[in-house]
Image (cartoon, rainbow, N blue to C red; front, side, top):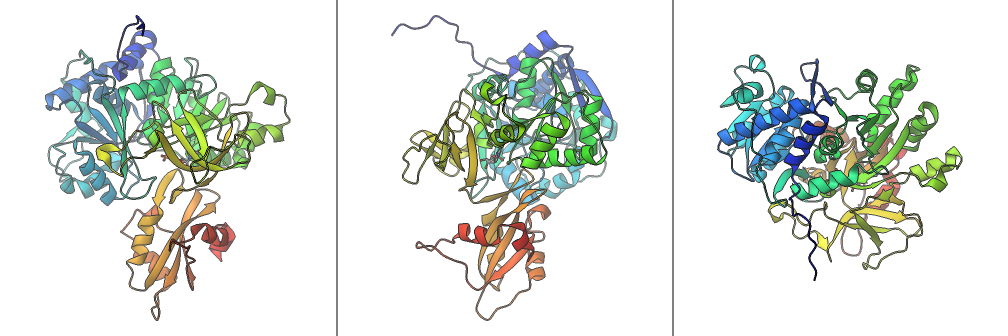
Length: 543
Ligand code: AMP
C-alpha cells in the first residue's frame, strides 16, 4: 500500500471554538435567559469563557473522561459548557429535565457524574435528587453570584459566575485522541433502562461537517439560527457545533417556547433558520395565523423528532412562504440521518405534489448509509412501496451503548433504528410505522413498558397494553388497554390516579380502556398492532 502523505491531525471540539473565535469572533450569540432578560455577546467572548470553564474543571481535579452533567435550557452558559467541558477532555452529559426525578437520579448515578450544573428553574428538581446522587461532589447554579438561591439544602452549592470569575482566560486545549468521548446523552427511546449514546470528538466534528451541507441543514455565516430543539436533546441536533463551524449568529431561546415567545424572538433577532419538533411549529403557526402576522426574516425551518403534520407543512409553505424541511434522526445517530430537500426536478411541480414529497423524511446525508430489510433481514427495493425495518451505519452512529447497556445493538455492522420505512427510487425515505415499543409525545419519549408495569402492579389488573393514540397537538399520547383480573374491579379514574407520583405527569396515560381479553399472538405476545387498529384513532380513545 502506498500511504498518503497528509497530516494526521485529530478532529477535536476545541478546534471549533478556536476557529469561531479567530474567523468569526464578532459573530453574535443572543440568549434569552431564565431571568427573563436577553444576553448578548460574541463567539470570541464565548471562547474566552469556555477556557475559564476548562480551568475551573482542572481546579476541581477532574480527569480526562470524567463526566460533567447539565440540567439546562438553551443559553450561552450551556454553550460555554459544551466547549469548556468537552474541549478539555471531559464528557458533557446533558440531562433531560422533563424526566421523572427517579429517572434523573438513575441516569446521574449510571453516568457517574461528578459535577452537575443547573439552571435555577430546575432547583426543585435538584433538591429532589441530590441526596441520591452520591458521586456528584459539586453542584453549580447557572447564575450570577448574587442570584444564588439561599437555604437550598444542597451541599457545596456555588454560582457559575463565582466559579469561573477568578479563572484565567488562557488555556492550552489538550491534543486528545479524536476517538475520546466528548458528550453523553441518554435515550429512553428503546425498551429497558435508559441507554447512553456516547459521542466522540471525531463523530461530533464529522456530524457537524455533514449537517452544514447546503442540501442538509445548510447553515451559513449569513444565517441567524434558532435551535428551539433543546441542548439536552441530542446536543440540539448538533447546532451548537455546526454554528461555530460556519460562524453564524446563534439565537438561544431559554425556557419560553410558546408560539408568541418564539415568534417575537424570530422577529427581534432576524432569525432566518429555526429547528425544532413539530409541536413547537404548530404552536408558532397557530399564533401567527390567529394574529394575522407575517415573518420578515424566517426563510426555513427544519422539523424533526416526529413527523410534521401535513397541515403545518402547508401552512408554512403556502401561507407564509417559509420552507419546511423534515429532518430525521435519532439520539443514537448524533442525530442527523436524512433531510428532505427537493431535487431540481421537483421545483416545477404544483404545490400539492411538492408537499407530498416534503411529507417524506428525506434523503440521506453523506456519511449515513441506510437500507430497509424484511423480517428475515433480506434487503428490500427502493421502489417507494416496499416497507421494512430501517437500518443505518456511519461514523456518527453508535456502535454500542455506554457501559454495554442493552448488549450489542448492531446486526452485521448495521444499527436497527426501530423505524419502519419505505425508500423511493430518488432516495427519499418515509417512515410508515415504528417497531420499537415506545410512544413519542411532543418530541419526548414515553416508555410503554414502564406504563404497563405500573398498571400491572395494581391488584385488579391482569394484563395491560400501552399504545400511542394520534393527537393533534402532541403527535401521540399514551392510553392503556386493561384486562381486569377475574372478579376484581377498578374504575378508570382510580387507575389513572394510581400512576401519579410514579412517572412524570405528562407521561401518565390520557385514558384507560377496559377489554374482556387482550389479544395475544402465537408466542403469547400482546398484539399491539391489533389494539392500535382498534383504539389508535383519537375518536375511539375518547369513546
Ligand atoms: P430521538 O432519539 O429522541 O431523537 O428519537 C428518534 C426517533 O424519533 C426516530 O427513530 C423516529 O422514530 C422519530 N423521528 C425522528 N425524526 C422524525 C421525523 N422527521 N419524522 C418521523 N419520526 C421521526
